[in-house]
Length: 287
Image (cartoon, rainbow, N blue to C red; front, top):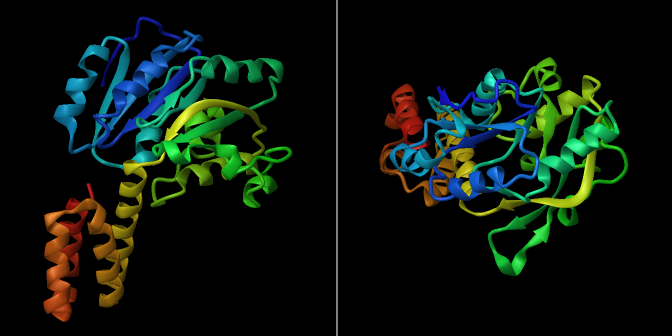
């Protein structure tokens, strides 16, 4: 771990996982350091990214202002948990490395805590970007209605975009942190468990972030399909495994996946007998 600890007790720890976003993370960090609220540390977690040389080249001008953590790939949940454990702030704020904040985001969120000290977690509206012709506010597509209680989260009357969340660190620790066994929706699971544990959640309808809805989301789904395909392969459901791997490879375009697809096409039974070997090969293709 590398980092600047000139401020030993920041109020907020900003947590930024990075996986294959070397081309986007500079804009993300610029938006963090443009915040009107200065009392924070920025933690960037390199989640075993295959673009590490490019990522570290981009991060070089920021190194004296960030805490940089480099780890084996554990997906976003594992990256966030690692950062939370090392965070020095009373509060943690989440920002995906392909998203950006408006300059007053942190100050606006901290003002919510100041107005209601009983709050444990807050979130806000955001702008979904990536296709200018289809830019819309998050809460136009995923409204928040009434209080953000456990029931409201389960029934999806309130939906929480992670890149706008600021929470008390102890709230997330008490709830058990993010579930690293989940292939997706680990953030939703975290908010639900926090609410179930008694966390009080507030939100603002003000647009305070820009959330990118392009390539990284597609890659996340592709990696989920790879894991589904591995399960189908283990169960010897060769057609379903081939279907999942094929769809995943349209995004990942990985040589290892093409090799597995070839094996499932010409000799599915033989491929099935080598399940453990193929799973190791496929795992390499998904990172």
